[in-house]
Length: 63
Image (tube, rainbow, N blue to C red; front, side, top):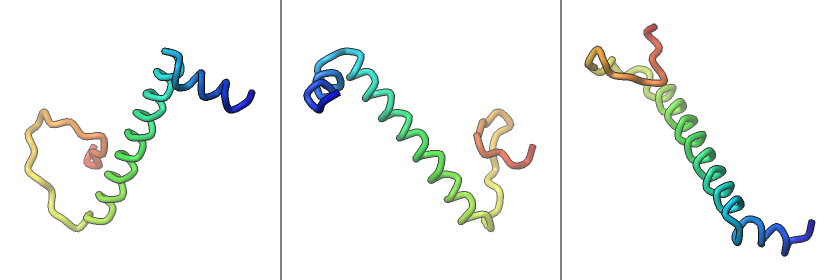
């Protein structure tokens, strides 16, 4: 596969553009989860924030 065929697939077909969007979303979500995890490790000495009972968090350490 040469560069011209890869370019055509990624930027000139619906499947390629969809794949680029999906890859971009996946990388963004992964980066956000990693940054949130590192931030919670850095500021772990902060007291708990008063939350409602129905609040949802991915990083709930109390359960």
